[in-house]
Length: 388
Image 1 (spheres, rainbow, N blue to C red):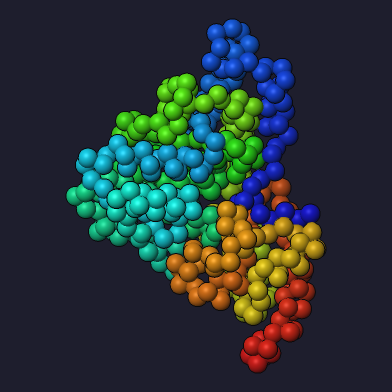
Image 2: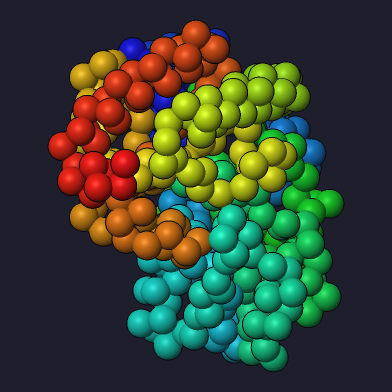
């Protein structure tokens, strides 16, 4: 299979799996226990925390492990809202956030909070000036993703964070797509809360983190129980998952520059061939270094994306029509609608996302298969025939 859906999830690295395995049946002690078997688990968690912190160039005590990006987003938004509700009840986010942020924001609206959903431009960028203009005296939190999961837009988060801090407002970023893919330093980027997930960087499913900076240290626990994670996130730790996450972070830190260069070159090669060789195709989102290295999102006029994806699957190519969390939805992508695509154009778009194992040969083969199947789909489309 040519796997081009790495934004949905990545294949776990063998080095990651190798470090995880002993913690299933050899070092299985509860990390809260006082005996040596438990201490082994506790040490492994601490080591993983160090590795995750190193990838973010921050201090280990600011890293808190969770079950994944969605929990981290919920924790950041809900507990900040609750803790600061005495100061205000206004939250700012954007129209192109992941559902873990959008739906959490909507749930807070049901509890009496007011949410401003900022628009984006035709490439998906949020303007720091728009954030500044939207901040009010009762604004308590701004949440803007670091990079969009569908169209790869890398937002100016450092500048947005600076605007927030000038106004005394906390800044959260959903960095699930960017973490380990591009360099990040929350302490220097004016980020107070940052969400990330292991399965986007060749780690296991079901484990993530929330970075909590010094200005957000008052944030309370979303999950209560035995007081794990310094009483910030209770529950018996998923030691094998955390160990795997830590190893994935270590590997990501060691290879990030090389991966960025290689994946950017492959991305631009694939985009260039498609736009040059397949008529009525157009890129969604920005180009160059303003886009995630491995992200491609293309609209193919006069075809239905779902039909194309089925044909690609029959040719052993895995791609998607957008966010994996929205797979099967009959609604067009909210991200593509937000950047000005109409519903028809949104339903004509597919996303292909690369890994460091993707090869030039695979992408060239993909282009040929795309051309063949798009020609076949268009051959029965009366609007395409009329346009020729």
